[in-house]
Length: 235
Length: 333
Image 1 (cartoon, each protein chain N blue to C red):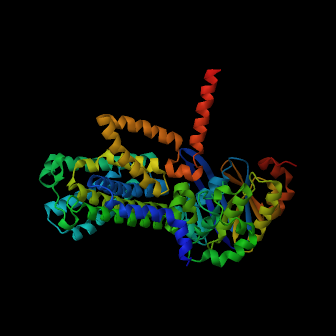
Image 2: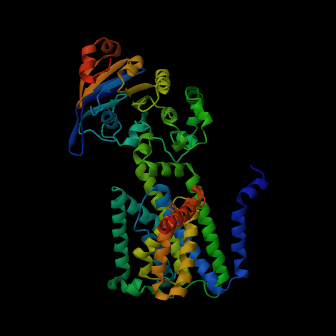
Image 3: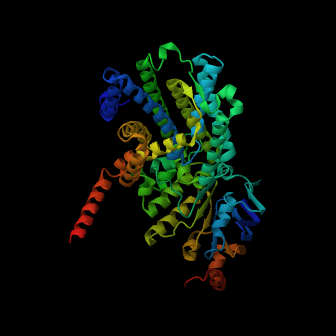
């Protein structure tokens, strides 16, 4: 297993606030890597730093062996990194079809990926002509993930996909991410430890802008004290 | 290919309007034809503004610089350098495009209202330049250029009907061009950028160059409209570069409906035709009355005339009448 994405000791500032004070992590090819941590631990900022939306001041970010720290966002995306943001990032004025089409990096991407996309998200076919703003939260989440699958992405950064969704939908979303593993590498941010533990291979825990724990998901599940300390997990 | 009948069915109102406009010279006198010409020119100017503000979310307070530059290119080259008209056309396009690139590259580093302020400054610089007395030998200073020679076959006075058809074709052509752009994949990206720049970037779009592109397209359209304006009035004065011109574009777009393309065209009709009658009825105080009408329009049609009618036909007006009558009832009791 080689690391597709390697983040080393990045420090990111937002305005004058030092948000990330040394985050390191790696996402191995073909795995689901989970980033855990409390609210404000810096999980989303880490994803945004990888994408160049909040470029880190120091540290290194390597993707497929290439340094991508300092690249503009669109270049990072074009290298094959898809982003499914917490707010889903759907274009509300565009239809479902347009939302998917706009993600094409090469002409005909959507046609080539149709089987994959509609295999995972059959509902989208039914909603094809609706505007993004007319979809429910769960449907938007599906669309956001589908959109990230349209171009040939090698890595998906998925930020709290289950936030604000009904438990039934949460299960569905997690099931889908589990299936995604066959196609792409996933770096997943998830607050809900129990949801994440089902599908994660490796996990990182962030606390106040630092990586405080690294290990296999299976080991973390047994380490109740650690979970309690950093995640305050509810039993 | 869809059958012709369904194509006609979907578009008959537009074809009817177009037919009326085509037949108009048979019924309208010279004065009204002239008014229509001005409406068509302003409509293209408003269209170009809608591409920026309505579709791409770029608020510019300096759009007059494109319009005015088109007018001055016509003035300087036809009058000053005695170029033939066909040679001036590519220069207008090039000027609009070049200014668009420059403005885009320099000012797009900042966003929103800061971008608007810098475009305003840009436009004011050009306005002041055009009126400067040191440049009087070329630009005519604050008086501007008058008596621009227009080829006899399209003379706005002697051949007004010809000029009318030229302006009408210009509007129709530019409208379809704008529609084509908006409905193209590039147009979708622009809408995406308007909604959220960061999202568009995370999909892999170079937001910056897309914005430069639309400023260039919009600038070329505005410059062409300005050029035709100079041909019609046979002059180019600093007024066409002034902030008042930009405000016209802003008003036409807001009144008609942002992001609808046809809205700003309608806005141009409202502003120019209404302005004409209001000036007749109220004399020099007409802007005051127009201001009141504008406030009313914004209250009843918060998304512009076309935008509001598309969203909820006349519900806004109905609600207001209900509220007013309820208010009256409470006072009575």
